[in-house]
Image 1 (spheres, rainbow, N blue to C red):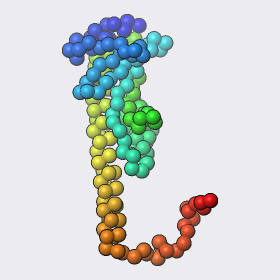
Image 2: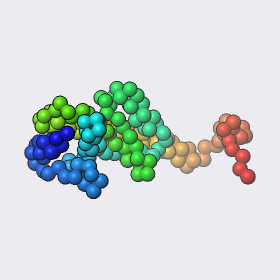
Image 3: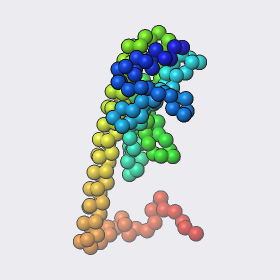
Image 4: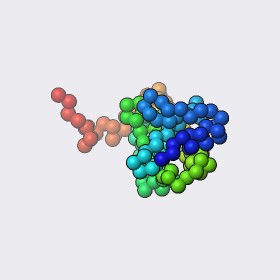
Length: 168
């Protein structure tokens, strides 16, 4: 696999050198976001990897949405969304064969991936705002209720729910 011709073509289009990092991955920075390229000679493919942001930590709704988008890779156009559980950062990854590509064909694949990552970055930001707004509304309602001294409803006073846990 002639990796250098792909790196040279990409470096020319970007106007910056695509470098190999300490982990042996090629990388470049685009809008302050690192884009990683991992060439896999075993199957003549390239894995692209780019962060798309931090999902909100309010509830699991956003994680369900991200996982649902991965179903059959339909919403991700063949890419895959992952989550680094250590940092909470979400990533988009895409693997494509490079054996039959020339330099411009390789660059087109990278450009398409970066555009897709941009779509998912914006979508994640939108979902975060939506969920955080819902939480703000619910908290506002709760605080107003407490501020006005609203009494608990009958359902609140009915005793332990079926979901309560016994503490010892």
